[in-house]
Length: 167
Image: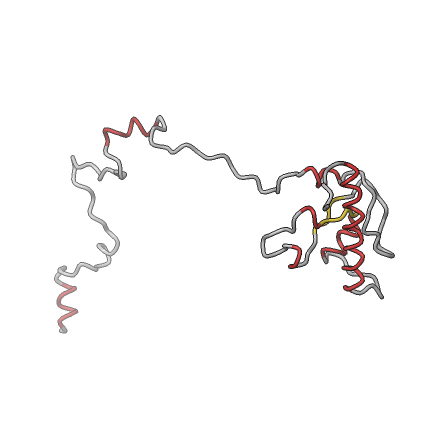
């Protein structure tokens, strides 16, 4: 008889068929452990009232502020007038900012409103690269036409009294 066979036959083995998954019950009169937080029990009443909560800050607005120049674009005619692109709709006109580094555009930065032109939604999409340029309309031609549109927009803004003369 081997040691294992003797050991299991005498009932000394903890892993017998009857005792395989048994757990010892809790002894009578014992309570389970209490769950405690990081706060002692005397200040729990204060927590329920919200005494330790910090006052919340108002959420930051994710939209850039509406300036007078941006608001003035509403209802204006498109000054970009890209060929075979412009739809001529005045209800979609917005101020289209320059995308060039020399005008102040950068990672996470928008060019100032003084380097913008009034443009319809179709011209704005082409300028920002959301829509393809028409065939034969090069990037240099687009930038040249944008610069002319900025000059035309400045003339409109001066008439409206939103832009001062450069004199």
